[in-house]
Image 1 (tube, rainbow, N blue to C red):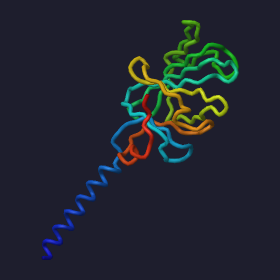
Image 2 (image 1 turned 90 degrees about the vertical axis):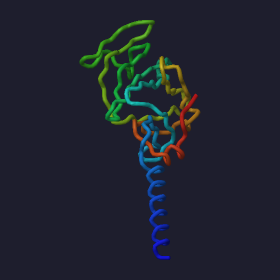
Image 3 (image 1 turned 180 degrees about the vertical axis):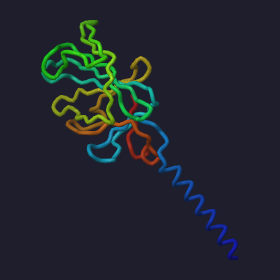
Image 4 (image 1 turned 180 degrees about the horizontal axis):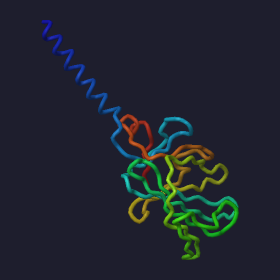
Length: 176
């Protein structure tokens, strides 16, 4: 009788341990949008190391789109590789950092070959006119509006991170 109880206890413990591993061990790489200064996952986009994505917003003074292109690095940092905008002026760079090149094409200014690496990006969704967008995929073929996932004026931290099944279930998956 005691052997049977011990066997059941061990089996139950192993099942609980396996369930815990399945639920709580991070395994899926994603671009994660955390509520500002918290570990609460607001939304996530499954990505792989080396994938690129864009954050597009409307410049508050020029009222034209600014495109920031990023790459997810193997160490889970985020590298800005390009910046595209239409007008020099307030808030826009007039030259490239070392190694970068400025090119004027298709009526826009491109700063290419950028090598700015960040552990995360702090961002605020537009409050009055929320026009931030996230673009990803082959040839940047997928796009969503931040306003469809976040409140106007919301602040969040964007990181490349590994998520557990539990976090994936609690967060909102970004999709078209």
